[in-house]
Length: 93
Figure 1 (cartoon, helix red, strand yellow):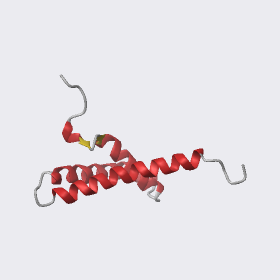
Figure 2 (spheres, rainbow, N blue to C red):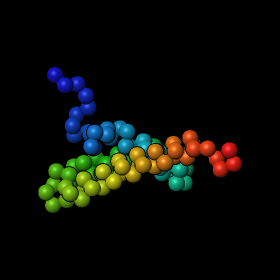
Figure 3 (cartoon, rainbow, N blue to C red):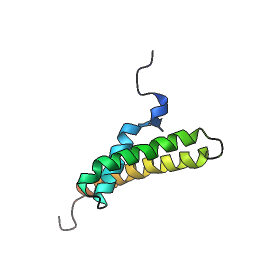
Figure 4 (cartoon, rainbow, N blue to C red):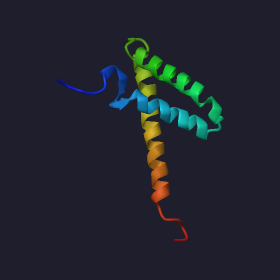
């Protein structure tokens, strides 16, 4: 018996519950006032779940999958970039 997250809640192995907070954090860092974070999380979850549902559609599935993977890889790359910036020595050091 396999224990884990249901397959329909995974996007290339990344849980939707990881993707939604990352999108909200991105929105806040882009200037969204913190008081709207709850609303932004509802919108982000709707967007992600809508794209997950569209993946099953033969006509739009490829585009929806591409958009989801773009979100996953883009957010992962942004996190990696910020970590490298934090760990890299400054020019004067």
